[in-house]
Length: 450
Image (cartoon, rainbow, N blue to C red; front, side):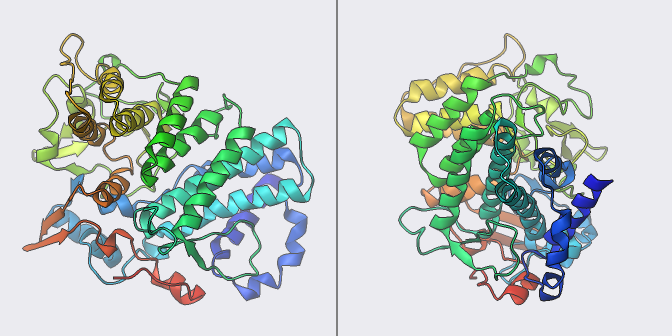
């Protein structure tokens, strides 16, 4: 009962922590009795799966080109904000709390992490177990800030990052100060700082993949540096992560005709987290052009997809069997990070070798056609093509489009719906999704430009 009381208090705090509610602050002194003072109580706070591992952002996935909505699906969306987000409308639209507010869930997770870090310091909780909890909280905070930066910030570019808007960096649970946006450089440096510190505290093996571990934090470092275009460091930490865990599933051992062919508990998951459940993303309708890029001997064609009664291609390759779309850290993502970084750094052979090691577990035994490349540019294109196919509906495509367009890929997104054709050109300001207007009004923070 006491642990549940802690959860209720923290959940209430989280719901208003980013808006500076003065009425609630008047009661803050009476809440100190409910603050967990033991390592076990703080571990319990970040073992709250529904807050820590669930409800990661969906706005980016909704905005990508991996799936489409038919007219009936679009009309069936409950909230106008979701419709306008899907169509990349240029006004300041972002889901309200009623529509499922990614901002709220992001900062709720951050508040939990901040509360645990505060408690550990406040009550002088030290030792191996306390450090493990400290490392988990740091990595969890970083994961939420990284997730948020992919939505509400433009692509990271070292040459302009000091001038671009980042996120409000709340680093403790104190509600007495108003949120202000940092620079993009400050946001990414905070993410890196948290992750590097977390690596020093975390064990190689956690009690569950629902808890952060050393390879999970290293995997997040690889992902972060990849988004930043720092390929040497992305490669370094990707290799270090898979030195602890590199196992892959052999798709030949999966039941291809099952509606849930990939188990929640599988050899590739290093850290389990998932996006918020959205009916328009589960099951997602996949563009036929993308589906046709999978070879008939590629088992992903059957494991990732099924056909509806009306012939539509529906996605079923979720690594999170019973919830929202998986967006955690896994060995297949890290192998693709490593493969891409080798190619970008001029080592085409190593890049292609890592790619082949992954793909041969995806094809029918004896049918795999080994990929070759004469130079790094050819290797890179083949790796990026396979990255999209392998990491479909994983919450990574929006970030990938942004970073690739930053580097000159020229990817133009197009939607055709309701007799209207809309496009999203490369590096458009709409790649930084609008902060919910209710948050802007309550805090006075600067809204993203349009």
